[in-house]
Image 1 (cartoon, helix red, strand yellow):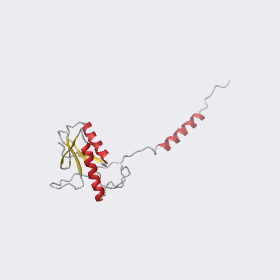
Image 2 (tube, rainbow, N blue to C red):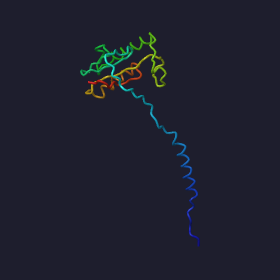
Image 3 (cartoon, rainbow, N blue to C red):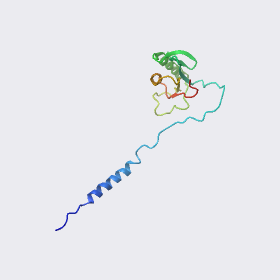
Image 4 (cartoon, rainbow, N blue to C red):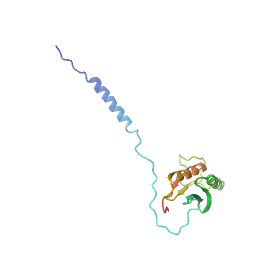
Length: 154
């Protein structure tokens, strides 16, 4: 009598199909991230900031300044910060201050091409939630992109 034999042909067929599927899917998965690394810091001293630079500074007493303008709000009450940023963006729109870096960015939330970059500076002792609320306020005002300033933190 003949001993039973296992037919491995269907198993090999399934393995070949799986191999082909994995070979097709492997190049599709993302393998890179879009990153903008800052340039090496230059030791330039006694220079004035760019006139279109907007820096939201959170002080240790939780008050908020916009560039050199004091008392634009607090961490808990940031409606005046939103209104002030909207005023600045409206003035830039009226003056036609076109962004040189991010005007054609595909992720830009607004259609105009004005400069809307905002830097946020906070002391290291401040909690994450407070900084996140200020970032959200800048987003509500229409800022893009929003960056955290990491040099010369208190």
